[in-house]
Amino acid sequence: MDYAFEIMTQEQAEDIAYNWHYDGIYSFYDMEADEEDLAAFLDANKRNYTYVVTKDSEVVGFFSFNRTENNTIDIGLGMRPDLTGGGSGSEFIKAGMEFAKSTYSPDKITLSVATFNQRAIKVYRKIGFKDVETFMQDTNCSSFEFLKMVYYC
Image (tube, rainbow, N blue to C red; front, top):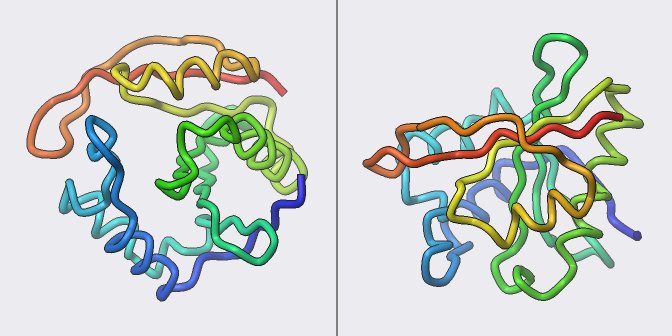
């Protein structure tokens, strides 16, 4: 895994926010689909926990790492649209988890994923994430069901 993690710059955040567009149902993850999510992603004050991920000097995705209670790191992530569905998701997510472990030394890592995204849920489960609970979240001008998952380090 030759992934590199660097604090995301404003220019990189804007490129991802305005130029990464996913196909079909996955357009749900376009940054422009929700004004609040877009504003939060572009907020330079939050950039200290959002990393751009490169492989062979090419941007392939991003991770955000948020420390919560009980020595837990909650992650958010995105893979460049043209790389999704091609079988490299496990390697990408494992790289993010290793970065989180070495940087933050958490006891557990959590994430939340829209329940319609069975492709991602399958990858998370394969890596060792366990289902915790489902919940409803308002986003993208509606309310959607999400699955909270946990990985014990």
